[in-house]
Image (cartoon, rainbow over all chains, first blue to last red; front, side):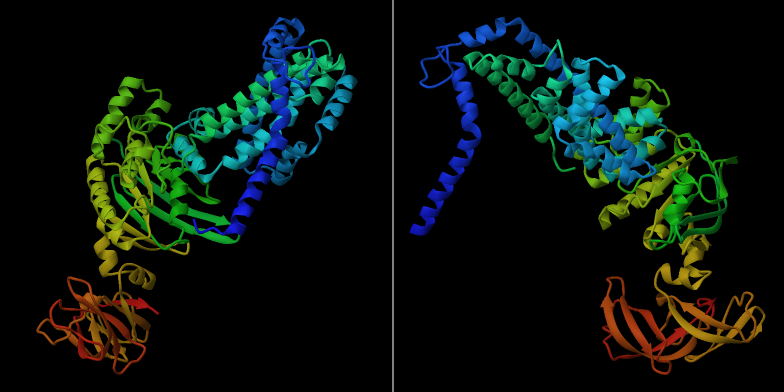
Length: 266
Length: 357
């Protein structure tokens, strides 16, 4: 090493800075998870010992487990719908000459720039006006609204000449339009379809405000956690938060492993 | 195997203000190996796309095997295409790729695997069916694309610059293979290329295209030796052009006055005395010495540059009298021509071709 004194101080400062950034990002999560194991009644320092009792209580809580199941369903179905719609829109806009294609693309992606609060309120007012009840279905529709633009953008960006040529070859060999989609386009687009599906799942899974506004009796997990928080801090809420975080991590890891790993240069 | 002729009549295709094809008519016989040859933008690929059904022309008709196909989509035509980038399905095995067309026709798995294996053997890839496209080299992918297109027994196979991405040696090898496969299956092949050597090596018939029109059309020997237009003479191999005027015509022979001397040319065609013409002469048709075969002198030229091509020397020369007459001349392998050398030029009456100015 030929680094001088100044270089070494620079490195130390850089390391300190990096540690501060990661600390800032992850400390709240670490605290949340740590105090979910608190052997005591309050999720505040000092840490009194390791216990799984709050997780036991969590799993014994019928409303919470029901909310968890609801959340899984809403995430799975809304993501599937968002990916399907986003893919079809991307296919249509990438492969056919449509009137006002630029405007249509802009309109499809526009919801990305609107805050969830506005989307939630808009849907609430609309659903009220047409007499559609607040429900998990309503929240699911809300999640499709926020995730479809994302799915569209991801899939559209990955639709290249390469697939277009393979589709042309399939048609040339006698494939009908649905066969081209099912046997060539979708399999070739798997990585981006997977990526957008898992990303949608992650967003739907911990989305709060739209679910809060659009559900009533059956609620999703974030809404149920908010209900618990209203009655005061409690290690059980930490346990619930840790659970949500843990599942988000699993989703992101799956995304990483199944999609990003497999992507190799064509 | 099936095979059918193609009849293209009065086809016009515009892209915006660009005319890609200008009232083109062309008949290709059943079982023929036809090559559409031309520079980029000449309309050759557009014509292929129209025969394949990927484009509907703004005017004109295409019929294949006697049936009008102008508005029929690619899937329902008796044609298949080998695309320039192969367009293999990357997620399928080689066997599934080759069997895809048969699968679309409802052929059962066992039968289509058998047929796909047979096609792979035809293109020299027997036993490789379980691999995926990315495990193969460029040349092998090319063969898979060919096998995939032939597996459905097309009446016409369309090849869109299929050898463009291969290196020279592989290209030569594939040209021979294509020729062999075409003889074996007997299908009509229409092959697009901008490589005139490739065209001469494989075609039964060459269609030279330029600016959306057909410039020349015939067997390779005829197109090379007696090109019908200046473009065709220039594009198919090297040629030099000498301006002249027809002095008189006798017994089908023309006496042509040029700045390099007067020469007699056989095959006067329909030229008349007084016509201003261009003589096209191939490098190998120049002699540097007088001889007993009727060769006539075209004066002398100075060698400007020489390159050694193995089988011979190729010299660029400038005429001593007519500064505008520059020619490429083949000189023997032995002997070392140098820039600055003076050489004599002689041509036989049967080799120059009279073309318009």
